[in-house]
Amino acid sequence: MRRILLSTTLVLLFILSFGCAKMPVRGDYIEEKAPPQISVEEHTATIVFFREWAFTGGGITYFVTEDTKNIGLLKAGSYFIYKALPGKHTYSAETEARSSVTLDVQSGQIYYVEGGIGMGFWAGRPQLIEVTKPVFDKIKPELKYIRLATPEEAAHFKDKEQQRDSGAGL
Image 1 (cartoon, rainbow, N blue to C red):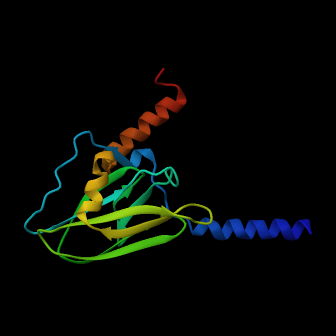
Image 2 (cartoon, rainbow, N blue to C red):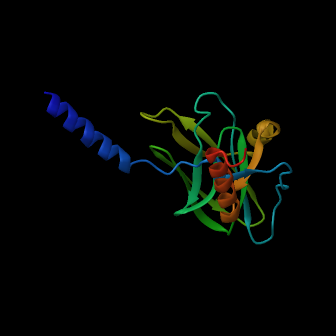
Image 3 (cartoon, one colour):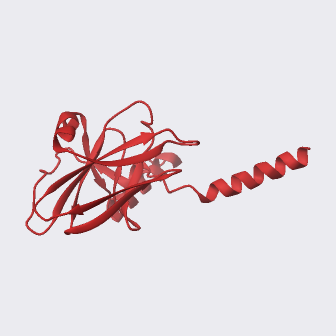
């Protein structure tokens, strides 16, 4: 009986290890003190991705991707701005499950996508849904603007963390 339980547990852990997405860490993003203006441009569409702060699921952060490219990330109480060429685009977010939203964007327009967290088995499930400007405007004062860190910024953050952990910064 013990052998069956151990085998079942190992198989379950093996299967679950393949279904998990890479979760963002602190060095993957930068909080900007002075956010850029949300503006339109002649040849691109502007998409504002945001996530209201909520206690439930507040510790879960996830990347937003287009195809396989990370274009931003959402943590509780944050937003980011993305410029896209006109046409159909599918944006996804993933934790233990995947959520996607497809937008047919036009240049010179602004679109809003709200991220959220739903109930999941092991972790919260991301949710992406297109909303209107008034929905964003209502909670914008509570949000912090974040952007993806450049490779140099991420490496610098990682170096600082390693120095701190090794006690070199004392």
